[in-house]
Image (cartoon, rainbow, N blue to C red; front, side):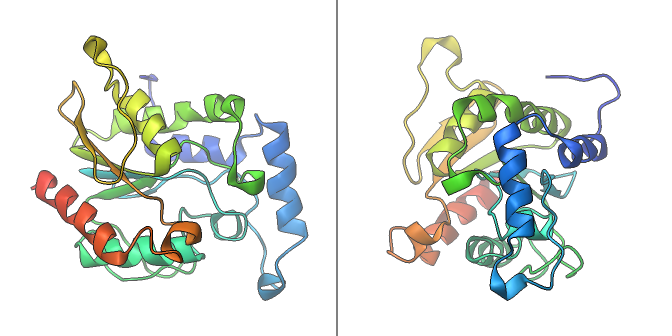
Length: 228
C-alpha cells in the first residue's frame, strides 16, 4: 500500500488515535483503569501502540499485539514485560540495540538497523485478536514496510505474526502457496526480502523451554548475516 505523503511519524499518529475496533478500545482502556497492582501509580498509555525503531532498518521484527500491562502501559512495542526483556536482550546481543533492556519510552533504548512492529496495535483480550480486528489493523504495518526502503529480512514471532508478514510480503506469489510457520523456517519473497519464522517470546514459550535464548540468538544471528 502506497499512501501519498505518507511517513512513519504520520502512521504513528494515526495508530495512537485509532478507534476502529470497539472491543479492543474498550479492553485497552479498561486495563488502563483497572491497573495491575505493581503499576497502580503509573498512567497507562491505553491507546494504539506505534511501531518503534530505526527508519533505516534492514531488519523488521513482526510480533502479534501489545501486552495489556506491557506496551499498553508504556506506549512502546515490547517494553515493560517479560517478552520484551527476552527480545531486547537478544537484539542487544545481536548488535541491533544499544542496551539490553527496556522499561519505558524514556529509558534511552535505541535500535540500530531494526524496526519493531505488529499486525495488531491494541492489546486484545486473552492475546487473541479476531480476524476482523487483524484486517482492520494490518494496513499500518503494510504502510510501514513500504516506507522501509532498506528492508532485507523480517523475523516473525509466532504463527499470527508469520502469517501477517507472509501476506504483506506476498510470499505466495506465483502460485507457490503460503508457507507453514515453523521455528527457523526461511522464505524468500518476490522482492528478495527474507522471511524467518521464530517462536514467539511469550512466557508460554520461554518458561517451558520451547524457545531458549540460544534459539532466539540463532535466528537473530541469521537475520544479521542477511542484513550484511
